[in-house]
Amino acid sequence: MRVDDLNRRTVLQVFVAGGSAAFLAGCGAAGGQPAASTSGSATASTDSKSISITDQRGKTVTFTKPVTRVVTIPMPAASLLVAIDGGADHLSAMHNASWVAMRDGVMGTMFPRALELPHDVATQDFTPNVESVRALNPDVVIQWSDAQLVAPLENAGLTVLGLKYNGRQEDVDAWAAMFAAMLGKPERATELKAHSDKELAEIKSLAAGRASAGPSILYLNRFTGGLKAAAADTYNDFYIKLVGGTNPATGKDPLPGVGMVGLDVEQVLKWDPEVILLGNFDAAMPQDIYSDPVWQSISAVRSRRVYRVPLGGYRWDPPSQESPLMWHWLSDIAFPAARSELRGKVTEY
Image 1 (cartoon, one colour):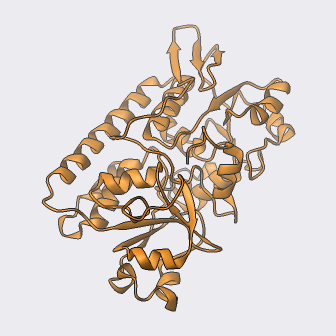
Image 2 (cartoon, one colour):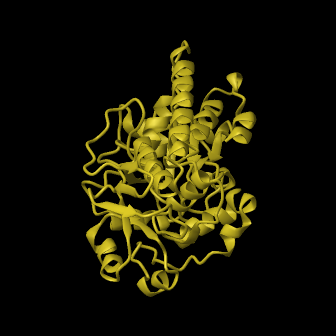
Image 3 (cartoon, helix red, strand yellow):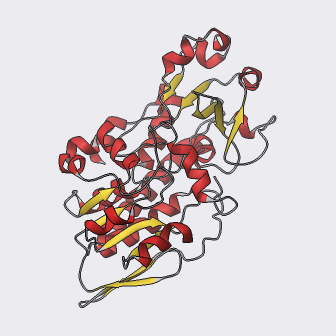
């Protein structure tokens, strides 16, 4: 979703409603699409005495040594920090939705200490619980860069790194660069980006080598309590097209607007998608669609090609350190006769 056009607090609150939440509901373009200008993109520089980082507000903060106590409020930040650091020892607390993702995914199994950490540091809409955060005495707090979210923390004397989100893989690269620098491990950001770039090139090569277009794939960010589909300018639209599929929500009969757009089942019936993806932003499962009489005539239902997007080290819907796994998984879903070595790639990641 284009959060430069909308208030991020309002946009992201939609994604955490119902407690089954995740960060950044699949949003924005990436990879092969032109990148929107992002002011204050992250840069980091280090020397033997200090670490200076310019956050995505354009504000520079300096640490005298690598940080050891980090509180994260944006939902993707906790898992990304652990992935870069190789453990949860330097994570002090996180947003509850981040904690839920760790509990329900593999991250909490790999790093059980993370599940013991406080996760009451912010409300659903990312408003910080300043007293809870101060009690942890963090070296730095990671927060969305909206002034109303940062100001209470800085007014309390806390050091804040502000993040912005445009729904692109480049967001992950920028955050990783900041996190790796402040942890004293800048090489980790370089490593992650190189790996991601390699996998992106592989997926593009596979798609370019196919003789025909892939199936129509509809991504539903919400199923329970009202349908929402990934329309124009979403990360989900990007990866559907990346693997060689088509997105009916941006095709000949597109949904109006950008981001996650509401629709009714009659529109889905009209599109008749061949594959339906259920996002990790509510509790819907394929069986919920299979058992609903209204959906029985849709191609994806008749061929049993309804899938819930995986939750690994983090949810695979939005851009993250595991996005290449989402690209390969979706490629396998779209083209089952040419499956990749996904299990091996998961183990590698």
